[in-house]
Length: 249
Ligand code: BV8
Image 1: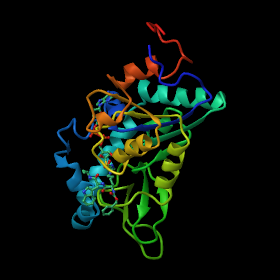
Image 2 (image 1 turned 180 degrees about the vertical axis):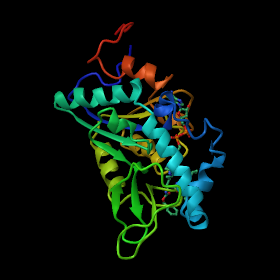
Image 3 (image 1 turned 30 degrees about the vertical axis):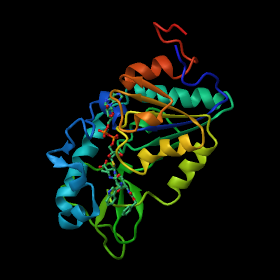
């Protein structure tokens, strides 16, 4: 049995995609043939779409916020949170980078998290740019902020064609530069710059591990590929700290 992390005093970076939330009942992007509520994600998750039809985009994200708030973290999220506790208690460093906007990693107890594509439970004012927690699920129309400019609210999400939040990429790359292992879970490796991070880790000679239900687009960039569902594979393989039944080290 290959443990992915064999001693706690390691420096570990984990990156996840929608696949880790699939077992919580949240559909993945490609798994839904790229459709969400019959929308192609690229057609809705963009500033152009929001300018063209703010009500449709606002409600698209309202539906996803409702679904996320009604969902629960699964064994995969919990295993990542346990790994963080085990590594940090042993004197190691841990960073979780997630492409997901569902908030399930934080609800599973993960602490050092970069939600690189934003979060469904935050909104942002398009005028004053204030970002604030927002778990409201009954505003069918995008509300206006109570700032002087009365700006239209938008989801605090990184859309296609938008840059990541300031500093995030630098912090992610800095953590990868100093890590011993980069573990990528539940992502098809098709969206950049997230999908490029394994290239970066490779260029630095860092061990790269992929845990995924299907072979990702960038499979050849990984040292180890564990094919399977995150909820099953992660508790068994992430670290020897927890003896799951049926483990044969
Ligand atoms: C950027 C938030 C610089 C939204 C997301 C033209 C113009 C502008 C940009 C581009 C362009 N062409 C290309 C680009 C770059 C673009 C891009 O990469 N496009 C792709 C489509 C080619 N990227 C960007 O625009 C990024 N910004 O480049 O800024 C810039 C700025 C201005 C102008 C030019 C450049 C911003 C990208 C962020 C977009 N926002 N999310 C929302 O959620 O609504 S992306 C969204 O899709 C996710 O966050 C995630 O990143 C991606 C979906 O990917 P996955 O998570 O991997 O999901 P998927 O379904 O694909 O795969 C799931 C996997 O899980 C599968 O492999 C499956 O096998 C596996 N799985 C399933 N079940 C399980 C499992 N694994 C384990 N266990 C299971 N149980």
